[in-house]
Amino acid sequence: MASVAARRVFRDRVRANRAASTQRRTVAQAARRVRTGARSLVTHIIATGADRRTVEGVADALRTVAKKKGVKGRRARIRRSFNGARNIVKTVYRYTRAQVAQIAAQYKPRKAEYKAVRAALIAA
Image (cartoon, rainbow, N blue to C red; front, side, top):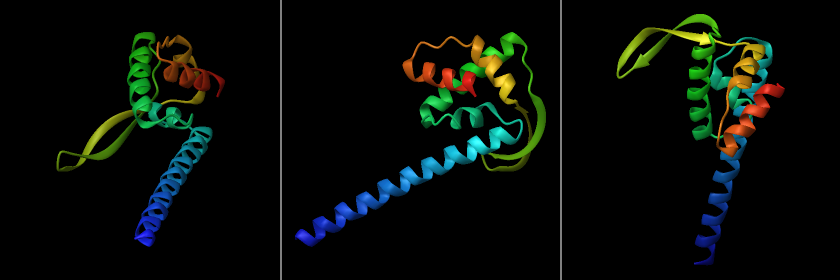
């Protein structure tokens, strides 16, 4: 029975290591993309290393601030799948690091996690 328990422990450790590796790789890729050109707000936030729920909350808030302050990113057209419909053309906006820093400077979060992301966005 000990070998079954040992295999479970090993399997769980492998899964945890794989998940951590995937997270590190995602952050590194986002950081590289942000350095090379204009990207979505979500990509900029992922580059700070925030978790998924924090990314979603901060991105929504930054979109609102950008709209209020009139900061417009570069328009792009992409093709996405929505609810089973394929190749739907959607307009998205891409922001430079300077624009994201400007938006983040106007953003006043309350949560500690959001404040940390804001500081990272301004510093970038």
